[in-house]
Length: 269
Image (tube, rainbow, N blue to C red; front, side, top):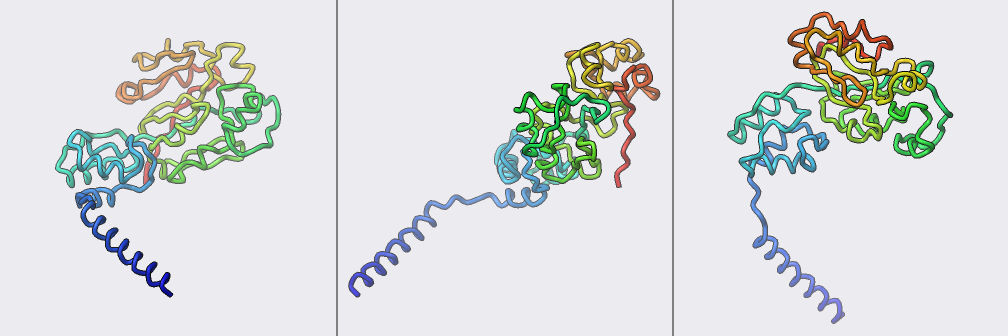
């Protein structure tokens, strides 16, 4: 009985001490942080460079050097809202979306073996470099699909990720988790897309995949506006220049393997 009384007394004493300490040591949070956090999309994608939406909300409210337009998924609407709340100016941002730089489906790409292991691209790549003969192509295990915080990716019947433009926010989480760096981000208004990631050239590239870029440079030579250059045996498109100048991309018609395709502009809902 005495032990029970003593323990109860100690519990009350410690409770009072903790309550007092909590009150004294509590850090008052700026109410604007909660308001900013409420307008963010809550994807926790980290595209802003901070560890989640709350961390960015704290930074943009408390640090005058943090701009209000870092939330890529929120696009201009969220940037303007954050700017208004924090009293900052939001520079214009260009909407972007994920693009899969691989068309290596069955029948086009050469497969060295059938992979039947863990559905994870990194795991597949650890087994003899992956099932595809091309060491730069999509591994098709859907890691990007699983990691997309907005459900913007699905895996096709041919095991290639398909991007849903209506859901893609351009957060680039899919690009970050791809072990082959197959996914990049391109403007929503891009006229053309490069559907190859292989840095092989000529016969070596073509033997691995019939739709591979062979680094022939015909796209570069035939672009009248200088909107394409070659890097690591792959064409790199200056989308801003392409959109400004070109209405009939000759790079698409001149590419012998169709590694460059005209992109159908997406009209949002």
